[in-house]
Image 1 (tube, one colour):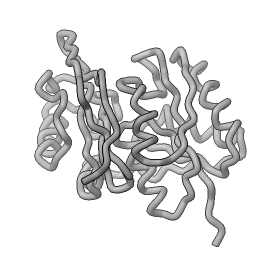
Image 2 (cartoon, one colour):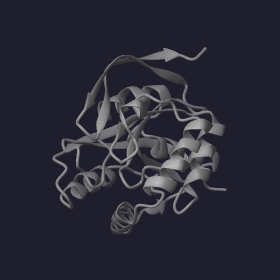
Image 3 (cartoon, one colour):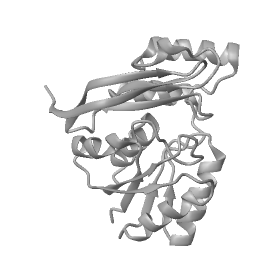
Image 4 (cartoon, helix red, strand yellow):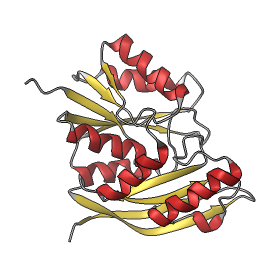
Length: 227
């Protein structure tokens, strides 16, 4: 059987990291991680919080990273990703979209234009199920941004556990949030997992709160051997 060479769109958040893992489990040969470092915190396409850590995370995963910067302007920011993907000798692109039609459609169209297969292992899966699968697989996921009613400063820095999933379910029932954060309700950072050869250690962080939303910004981090 011929193994397909693929690149994975990677932000360091839970869904792109888990999509990478699922692709590996399915036998794809992941030759590159691909990241767009957006200057805009309001990017429609790209995760921006702590995006500078993708270089260290690539070391943890021991997969080559190719990245570029973007001004994060709507639609225009797609060209930055297009040029990155066009430079690679791969047959497919893996993305972690679960419910975002905006992202799914644009990545799929881009892949069509580049004659690449668009691989979306999490697409339209039950969001609570995905969260539980990520926990069961052994990923260490930290909430680093909150932007929705019901998610206050106490959520910043929380590790996603089964108890947190229960809390998110209650938030969904009372406030209508998307449990997986696909509506921009919260952002995450993965610091360890079953496909990590090393782990990321956060050494210095700074919490920023702006009345009804906030971020946990990583100032210093390093790569450590796993015990």
